[in-house]
Image 1: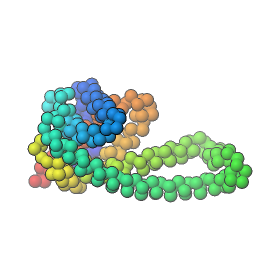
Image 2 (image 1 turned 135 degrees about the vertical axis):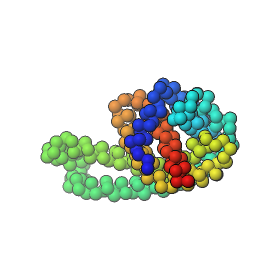
Image 3 (image 1 turned 30 degrees about the vertical axis):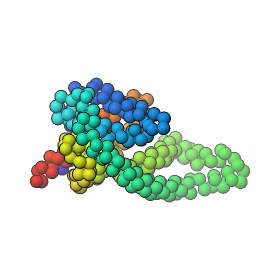
Length: 265
């Protein structure tokens, strides 16, 4: 049984003494991808070519941190040294699947969200909207929030606005996380086994994640919720710590799945 609290504590333990190096490595990794994507004309295609090998490399580096096995900056390039072709191929296999499934899920999530928004509008906005249509008085649109503020204070309208913003963000981001769940361990598998081909790694990830997708989804939802205060209260500076932590905790999850599968075997 994988405990979420254990995943967090093990990740903090693994990063102890490696924070500065990890922050620098992940910053360079993401900055390099950004530079490649910014190349006019061919940036998008080039990023698809290098993303697979780079993800293998950053997975190698993360697993070395987790296992306290002398992580080095050059580990990020391991995906180009070993299994380069399969690293590229794995990305080309996964991207279309995740895009199609993620897009379908996003449409469903957004449709459900708009139903909720419609209910909220009918609950709070029906009369004020009619006033606005008849008189074109823009202040009429704010009347529900004024009523809420008068009756309950300023907290309720703020919570209502936050709910709309957060639910919309979740509807945009969460579908892609769900679509990628079965394939989440692919590049960690390729980081450990340099001889495995792309399709076998994808299938192995699919099999490994059976029975663990819900737990991994919960983990990602918690990370997503944590991202909101990190961005709001640290003026994005907290991302320097958040990004390596959120990737390495996936490596810890991979390690725990492997332990459990060995116990079953």
